[in-house]
Length: 194
Ligand code: IMP
Ligand code: MG
View 1 (spheres, helix red, strand yellow):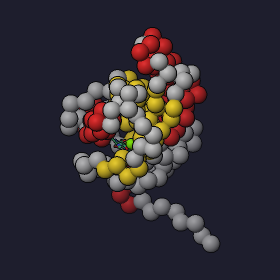
View 2: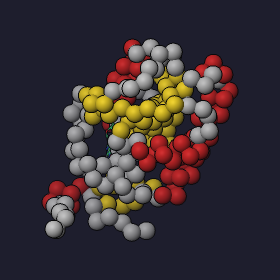
View 3: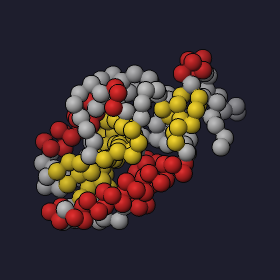
View 4: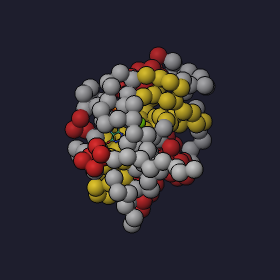
């Protein structure tokens, strides 16, 4: 597979991601089918922008009737370090009152973002809030937070691709890999020549 020059090593291929996301979607679908109390009132809530490829893949295999909604919450500002204070820049456009919300996230690291959003949705009257993340980076947790489901458990290192960005770029890689942090420091993005 062609590797972007800023990727040191590919961690999960397109095929790995497809297989894991399918399994995850089927498992979660079964969970909701068995839990009849949600009775159709389910909202899939994607956290932009990172959720896009994961959510699209997840929805291909998730057959339970649901609404879809999105929020933009930033804690990272396109850099390697989190600012630590989540900020909602795109809020809900639908009511979540008395509904079950399944949040779909690309990666959980400190847990600060998800803890904040979960509490926010509960304040908005959600009946139940569940969290599914493609990647869980437990090692950097700053607050106590566990997702209900995760695809892969990852160790240290800054990841890019399949929704994960470095300086708002590289989200469009079809795989997930480790950023070459040394190279990234001196990297100049190519500009379109007119
Ligand atoms: P946290 O759990 O509040 O620290 O925030 C998680 C958010 O930080 C994710 O939604 C990503 O946007 C970003 N993030 C965390 N780890 C990485 C990474 O390895 N690569 C790219 N973005 C990351
Ligand atoms: Mg994110």
